[in-house]
Image (cartoon, rainbow, N blue to C red):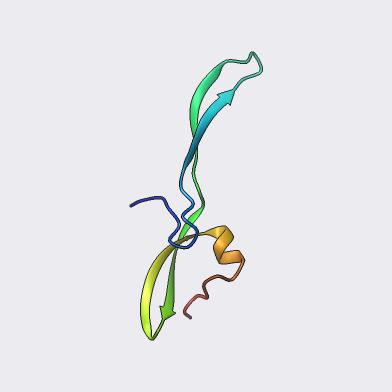
Length: 63
């Protein structure tokens, strides 16, 4: 399962975790992906969207 949003394309970002002693180790920030059932043009689809897109009403949930 890919960790990308079907709406905005948000995907994992990588960088460094920096300790108080300024040691650097690699880490990953992953988006908050949810599986949402929605209806588009009369067909029911399951989309993987991030919580930010869900909150901003780009897609409405099918009840």
